[in-house]
Image (tube, rainbow, N blue to C red; front, top):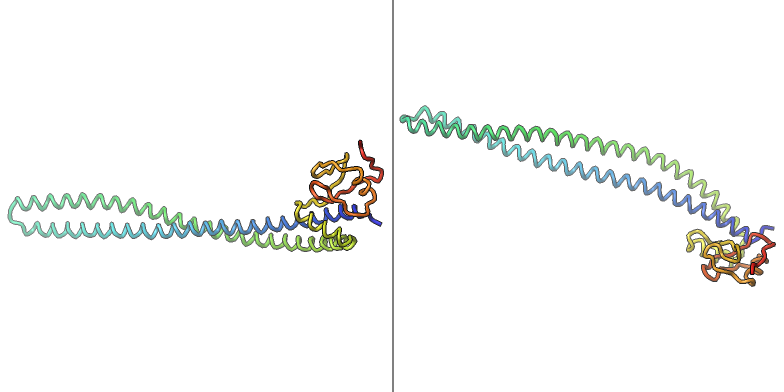
Length: 241
């Protein structure tokens, strides 16, 4: 018959295997959520770039309207030249035309520079869209891989849970209660070995009476300091004075 301490040790190992697989599942799910968050950030960046492009295009449209205004004014002034009778008025209109042509030239240069920048913004939007598409495709591929991994983990967990349940059934109600409470609240370490007269989890010194109780292996004995279930590996253990 297997000793109760051996059952508890095996049970602890099995429960920690379950904890490890469960943690791995959580990490895999978190990886998916992280990728989703990254895609949302990329989409937000794309949206902002598109809005910026739209606003920039409106600025160009406004400058092109101003340019047309200059061209209309210059054409009107040139027509006016044909109707002027004095040299003084003719010179004044000619000077006005030169000033407007200079302003028109500067505005054309501005528009040309803005058109170059506009193309750069369009290229950036194209890159953003491709980046989003690539990230979404990678996410879909990763989800397939993760789904396969999760399915394997679920099958492994079922096998381990069967082992756990079988070991649990060999414990009495009192032992099972204490073990389940400790494995949950003590970071997966419910059972601790006594070595050199001390609990190996908290190093609290145990008494000779505790040693004798552990040697019998007939009841659950808890560490008076950390509360974990104690056990001794050897039946020949001697209390060291």
